[in-house]
Length: 226
Image 1 (tube, rainbow, N blue to C red):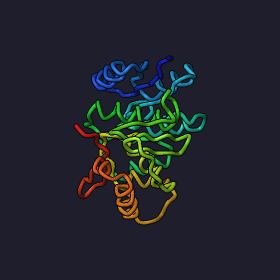
Image 2: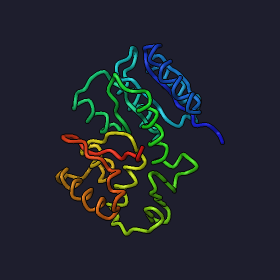
Image 3: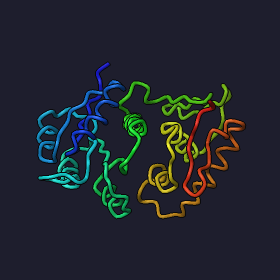
Image 4: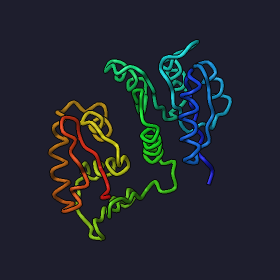
């Protein structure tokens, strides 16, 4: 199967190597750029890049401008890396069409998990329609879920919520991120609606509902039994 091609853009050579090594280890093809201008040249020259990992603070052209230029022509997924933990920066990133936003320092394993989750969401993997974890099988195409081989009946949002949890297993997800991803960015309701849906979902999953862990003060994480 053809490997997905990822463009890693960062002015720090050490950071590029760290990210590249982990991605290559997970069977991705990686291209590197040391600044925004080089990134755009590579992106439009290659014309087959599947995902961009983009640092915000760079010489010549920063990550925001690179993102704007790419979004003017392409919907290729973008993960932004930044040393800032500023909510305004994060909101700007989402307004520009950023798919994920990760603050430095970060775990390379978590970055790879985010990459894999994006490819699953955008249908760029072979197993795009079926997700399996912890004895749960979720078929997106058939819109069906089985727990330990037994079918369970979920509402549309419960199904979407479970799919999102399973595609991001092992990753701590804030209520805001869940709300933005499952209810979409234009939803203006209370983030506590997630707690209500999780409660119903856990109930329908029986014992497997325990796989959805509560992270107090933050959100949730789907974690398989060890």
